[in-house]
Amino acid sequence: MPGTEAPGPRLAGAEGVLEGPALGRRILAAARALREHGVRTGDRVLIQGDNSTGYVVALLALTHLGACVVPVDHGQSAAGTRAAAEQARARWLLCRTPPAAPPPAPAS
Image (cartoon, one colour):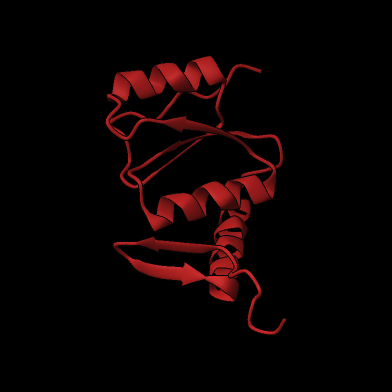
């Protein structure tokens, strides 16, 4: 029956509401930006941030790229984040503010 279709994905947060095509465009734009910065399929990416629309968009963009997402608590200390990066052998850290010291490069 017309008008009974289930609504598409919807994200609501302090930044407002994203849904339907606007949500898809935002995810694809984030994926494009990450790809342009060098994130590739299979890369391990630590993601650290508070619960927000932007965080979910980043998660979905990384998933779209086929990256291996490694969530890190946004309250984690810089030392804890570095330890997680080493353990996961992550190539990237995606966060709102730069850490005091970036995670080390993974061993080859």
